Image (cartoon, rainbow, N blue to C red; front, side, top):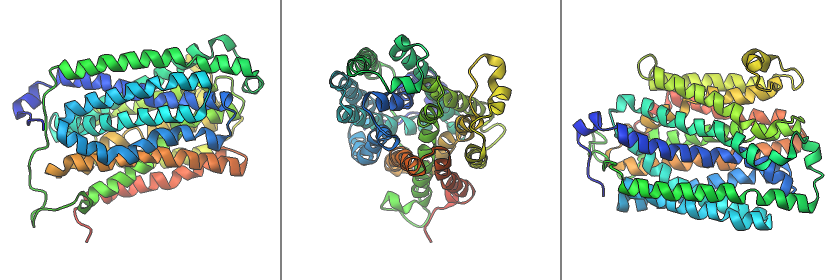
Length: 436
């Protein structure tokens, strides 16, 4: 197991480790937010309805739920650094699986590749998030995680535009309706365009394996600290702040993925020509939110206040999505009309603004949930990672509601109880140290 990092090294030696971990978080973002562009793309080449298309997120995020605890056991044996290298190696396999999937234009094969990518990201997330928390003072943990989130979401801004340029460059401004009429040969050619990007991804991941294995990343293990005054606890399930935190993360990741991955499908359904790049709108909003986190936590607002503010803002955005016009572009004209970026209907803009609203949930919740766990920190991290399964469950639920209503807009009511639970956790849940 990794040796503990000295306190002085924590204070003064974090620049290089943060740079290397930042590269990993960029890859997290690139792989994760590629799904938002991939969903409408696979819907076209595999002839899928909304419910079927959202199985992209199910395959990807369900890996977190299945693999989190097994990966935490592996992590206990090989340490944080070894876990990062293993996670990257598994992701190389997942990226390479996209080659036969693209050649066969096979949706099940695409889903298998996504599951393997998600499995690799599971161990990477299980290792890297507590690593960032433990790399310095816990009071500034949210700031460090916000920096990582800023890098992660920055990748999310770039990837839809890169994807659209590589995949749709030959199609010009072809409308969503025209894309549905492509011949079988044209669809096969479109599918095979995925091969080169995923080959590049596999190469980049292989380079990062070498970087992690041979870089001067310090070894860190959780500090052995008392967990309760009345005696030692035997199970991670005896820590309410972690269990409730995992539920809050389930809700958060569900709405985060909905905001990032459904906006393109929503735009496509409304007939917007730029539907393939709409994920970038959400990611820009999330990036702004992370900048707020980096600059304001803990100097101006506490981690708990950031979490509460996110819940309130998210609730207001949901109301904006379901109650706003799909014809008027007034909101986006005010916010981005001056920039030359294409404007979108008000309802679509509120989906993007959900990214800004909930951006601080992840960095604020992790240190609150892991506080005081001591030797249970790896298990606590694994339990929180399992909450990422919200990204597997809630987007398909949104797709099912959309198919049922025959309209995507009212399906966004699904996000309201998610924000309300995060609200509860920010007010009471994180304080719980016993179930009675």
